[in-house]
Image (cartoon, rainbow, N blue to C red; front, side):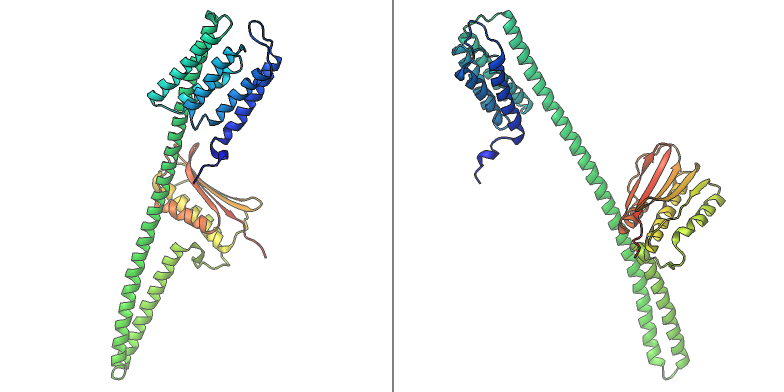
Length: 379
């Protein structure tokens, strides 16, 4: 597909190029020019206005832009005008050559083009080019090349850091996905083993009962009892697994919200010899939201007991206008960022299923787990 003219240069270069062109014209109008240079007229102003416009293509073809902008310098001097403003575009083009390329052949070509421009100016200038002028040219050359190389180095370092951040984020997401997939696979295996065994036993018992129903009704009744028992056990196992996969199906009665169990949880922890400070508050959550938040608090406290032997555990529950926030802080020396484990994955999944957010990581003085769920929408 052909490239349209509007896309042949970077949009971000339009403003600087036209701004420099306007500044060059204004400088030509108001800066005094003494002999032997000609005062600014239409031709001199046009040269000052056109040279910066080459910078529109400086990212696409920096060497070509440097050649064009550099040619304006001796041309302006040959026509008898001062190159005070025309030279700006050439130095910017030289800066671009060093900031957008690390290949030495291109850099050598850029230096050669800049040298030709300076040499042409020295030959064509009608004034006296003294030592101070050459010193200024040398300083501009050093600034353009060194600053260009520094800009390239900073850009490469920033891009490398961005790639490292993206890679770390992808690795963490992949690790969490793998753990979640492993957990689901484990639960599927448990479901297959439990229900497969139960169904096989029930089929065998039903077949035996059917065959002896007429001759031995008492044994057939016992077979039906075994089928009922195995079936109930299978339903219990299925319900347990569904509660793990779907926190909103835990099955606790709505009349006894799960958050009321926080006091009992705190009592068990204290009985084990660990200090736990509970700061509860009245919150407005759906029954499934309360159960999910209680499970998150339970898992966070369990992790604190599992990973540290001492230190105070603080459980705070509060509500803002539309958000219920649970924070569990394990006061312990700073811990490294956790690797995704089943506990963290399950807590994050419970919060996500309730439309909330979950965070876990080291903080000053310990390790914090934070879950924020939306309040219940009242009819």
